[in-house]
Length: 469
Ligand code: NAD
Ligand code: UGA
Image (spheres, rainbow, N blue to C red):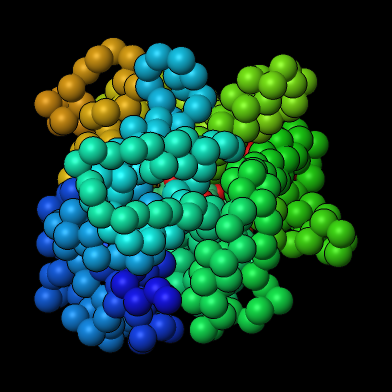
């Protein structure tokens, strides 16, 4: 019977997932561990606003279960030793160098977890892949776990399961509390039943799917690829709308009403961001190529290509409308997170768009509801698009502005990049009094009411709007 759970990795998945398990399973004792002491300290912070992950509803759950049956620690070894079940929930970014660079996942963190478990675990341990992994990674984990270990004489045995996570950031708690499905892949029926029973504390039995290991690993990559593909599809149509006079919101509505297609994930925008879509599709591309399926690889690679093109064409549209010259122009940026209701900026379209604008000589005043100034500084400095190799912060060409309206004082343009609700109903009359003339509004999420903006003599370009001037 499982009594103690250890989750390795206190990130966007590990923290919220274990919080929800702890809330629904008071009989289990759960510890989330991480090598990043700063992150652990934030999870343990007495100020609930200092949690390292911003997720609506997360703080309330943490307040209830932390110190009761959920704890956060950097003592990874101790936690592994006493656990009956270990979730591996560490980062799996794209490999930067060597074989498969730019496509397959860098498994160094997963492998180091497996080695540590092999070294330390005692008794029977169920090891659960929670991270999203290339197909067949479970075999690597098994090979490491089942290899002999001269340093550990205790009686040990392992079962390896795949249990990918489908939560989306910003809605993580709802997604975890009421998942569309829970997927458990494995070949050890007993271990699968044990994990299934844990979920059955709050997830209806019929929503728990059991498959073999490889189906489970591949289903996760496929689900993300399908979702991302819908975004690239609608974004490609947004460009056709602008060229033909059609409107992307009207088209998406009409298309989505077909019950076979469905309404979700048809919102055009500046391209998908987030740490996973690009990485998981590229993993699929790598897998297809590995098995000689080059046409399949090309099909999925194009989903990523359209995504990059969407960001590039938005940037070019902005430059064109600002007379081809951004030197000494001030541009307000509304939103830096890759989507609303999260403080995560990984792969955010804002990074490449902002860097391109800075490289053109623009001065940016950046606002976001939850992203911190230090995160933005890190993102802008690191970005590969800064082709001139200019140390951006030294040039003093952007600032972080906590007040939305102040970003626009004496500005030549504003670009709405993230769909935060605070940006939807701005007082455009007030804006018209503080900005330069002519002034452009670039709405890359297609959520603003053009009429309201034009009323005050402001120009607007809206993504997918065939009525743009
Ligand atoms: P993250 O970067 O936020 O967190 C990972 C954590 O693991 C980090 O804090 C890191 O310090 C820690 N870590 C790495 N190696 C460690 C080790 N050996 N021992 C202890 N701690 C270690 O990542 P994330 O966003 O939580 O994603 C984790 C995995 O879940 C990835 O595979 C990702 O693809 C997948 N996933 C993410 C999401 C999401 O919305 N972010 C959703 C579903 C699945
Ligand atoms: C996505 C999936 O939705 C989750 O199911 C999955 O678990 C997760 O990836 C993962 O594996 O990491 P996430 O990236 O957090 O979740 O957020 P999404 O809501 O999927 O949004 C991703 C990006 O697509 C955002 O930049 C968002 O703005 C964009 N998007 C989304 C659109 O442009 N249009 C849409 O209609 C939907």
